[in-house]
Length: 385
Image (tube, rainbow, N blue to C red; front, side, top):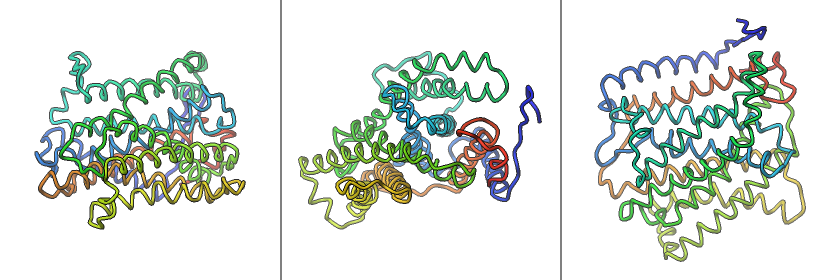
């Protein structure tokens, strides 16, 4: 297919066919859910927030933080060495927030009323603040990535128009992200007496925000490593090293604050109770903080540059650590207060898997056809998985 002289392609591979299969199942489940409501899930009054909230909101929003952090590093701080990863980071964030919005729609009991908060403001509600920030930031990300899309479609004037808006869009995106990343922690400040004290703290907003700022560049690093392998792009060592240092410093702040908070609140002994809850908390801290920080500071104190292998390994560990943290807050920390077990239904599992599959397909399509990476090699992209 050709649009304005631009040839649009999408090569079929076994991997992509599997993703398409999951996406088709996803569409069927979506249709069933919209007609029949949440009875297809295992959500209850004890567990009103389950797998979808964990994947779509708690984890998805955190991992999409690479958009505002990388854009802020490049446009606000003026670190030009990260230029090669700015557009991929914004693309990942944009797709991530689009999927977050769709996932939230699935989680609403009365999904057809999704527009009500726009006209009926609940100024004192954390959920209202989250709703508006996520909605507005999704619009901001759409405008930030618009120059790439319109340029690829041969619409240079429209692309130039959105390019001129870059500075205010980036500043607005940073402000909106700061608000809703921290508010995701504020949601659980309200669960005093329910969330286990290994995770409940008045510092949750700061912990959520700082961990997102650390894991955003780590997620961009993972994405860049995978894209480089499949699309044959060079590894930009200066950019990746800077992002690794950024994540290392911010994660150090997070780890010190987390341990200090546990100490001040007298929870260090509970951390070593060696029951299920404490073991999950230890796993989260070891995988997401202690191991990557050990590797990071070992190189830093010895005056050595981190290798590609170490940078990617640390990034993966940080992503896993944040995933464990968000999962522990949603599930492990709330299990005792719920008083009953929860396991997602097959519909919940396949809808989540299908949503992720659709996101990957969209990413592959855009990277294959638009100028996302420097010196984009379309032939290499077409032959990728």
